[in-house]
Length: 298
Image (cartoon, rainbow, N blue to C red; front, side, top):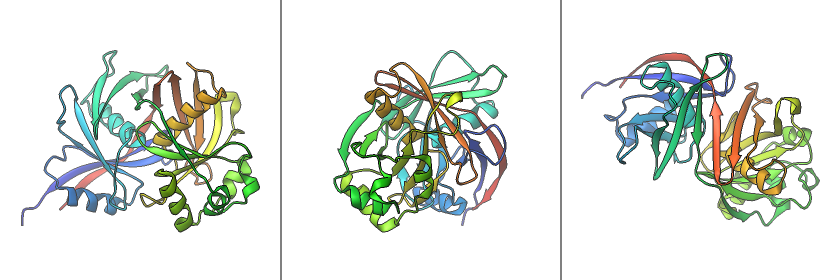
């Protein structure tokens, strides 16, 4: 049997300090790995996602990204799974801060990525998501509340829970307060059934009373994805983008504006996700840190 030595890194995304934000395993130069090996490696890391960097198959793309959950599901969309990969690419000298955008291939999507330096000369990655698509709503609000471990009155009356996608479709559920968001204790089986009926991957439970509105935050959120085997995720770019699109459509955030979504605080992994929205163009930004590296002996 051939032995494989495969390098990897752990990147904390949406983080300015180690052990905050959302940890991502990144496996570079992974073209020699089979799909089954990628799934097994993602299970070994047991993080919400592991991203493998491989050569692109689409013209014009510099990198192709494949991301798997610990449960073995390959996921689309561009959130921390992609941002963390580009943070590593910049740290490794594979890409440089430049006004010229790069292009990444994720599934069938080709998405622009900008690598820049912020005012403190730290690498910051800006990434486009797919144009927002507004899908179905959850019909049984009482069952949705029960699936989240909440009472019906914990959900904002008159605000439908709707699936919105900017690359991955998630059910956006507005709660009446941050306290209600923190009280959620999902019933995995019931919530999964509600999500599958609505056509959503995960549930993004949020309120419009963030901890730090003075710093640009507009919402406080938690993310649960029993469909992909993720109990709770501390920072979910593929859900924050749809929420920003929905808030712009409702007039909560002005079109052409920028805002922050707070997530991960109850998990002890505080994350601040910055999103820009201008018409159908949704962009997400992140800084991050490499907190571990090593070699897989396969």
